[in-house]
Image (tube, rainbow, N blue to C red; front, side, top):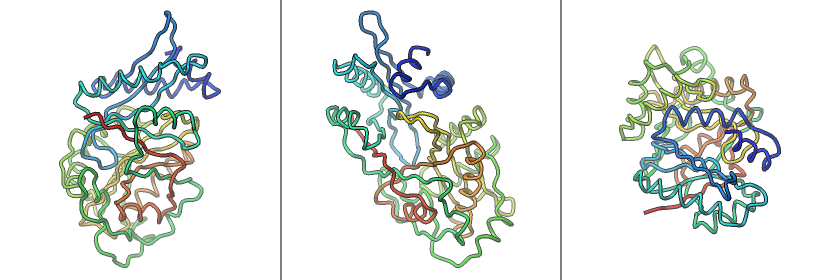
Length: 321
């Protein structure tokens, strides 16, 4: 642990104990989901790689290995250590039956761009979007006015399904009739039901893990449920990211948002984001990020409408089969 923190600090400029402590806690709690390797040369610690298995984040149907961090000690780079770590991760992913490795990186990080290029990663068909808390317009709109297209194979094009356009006084509905609160263990059945109606798939394993994480580490997982007249009508799952992909600033990652089609255009989606952004402000997190398929015009429109825009980060995939 200390060797990882020291190596990382030599690269990013300051120690990030909290981030690595949280990643270690998550790995120990879910050993079947996390893959972590270190590299040694002449009995010296010279690098590490950390990844976790994705089950359903961002509406995807196919599992993948999410590469969260890879680092090689300064002075040891250019010797194939990073490639060896990645090769070991690929071997483990294949053993686990995971067909793809995914990651993101800033386009300004030329070294990692070159590394991914040499490792046969390709630009993903998904877009990374982000939104600064101080710039969001989520409270300025009157309902959910986007139409999600039909389901697209491999990614849920209806992750948020708002149906046909309809007039609506958002402020009154969102504040007076939509009750948004922190996700609880008892919400599991409702979330599975809503997610299945939205995506057309029963993703019970993924949803169950989201709920377990929300119960076990509320400082990291920020997940909410919206109710209308006491009935669960939508949910959002997000987590505070304190260092994935080499980031040095705290960011929130929104990985699923779903609204029951029966409650489309009643301000549920906006109410969920309004409360999520308020919680993030309280945590000192000033930016939220998500990933959306390029062809999912409905979901893209929803996020653009509340001030999300294309991030300076790019998404990369590497197929292993």
